[in-house]
Image (cartoon, rainbow, N blue to C red; front, side):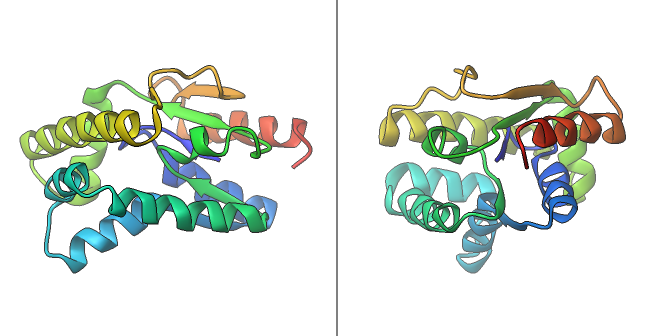
Length: 172
């Protein structure tokens, strides 16, 4: 399980870890983005809608729990680490300062920095509110993680080596 805020590197590391360990890869963010696209909404608009309609998050979480229960998967998700903390073999939190993450998001999505900043701040605030309201989870409590890495402090390769080494130490 690799968790972290938008732009922290969750997908980068989860995909690679899944490939190297011969596991499948699952991303809740990909599902959320596809639902937003289907509805013709931006991520910020989709987040606002999810604040009003808990069925969106609950359905994504139901699917995630189902995938996790089958095993053999690396999950890339902001929330699932808290939902699966008692079942997951390895919980990794990747993080980076907001300005680093916003630059990554702007580059990845091909949007101006101001737009990336506004949408990132809004998404994160919305997620905090929803996770607290729906599950009583405070995402600032990172004590559940086996490893926390600030991805702005290391190269992609060095960060990945830390994550992979932790996975191997946990028998994965």
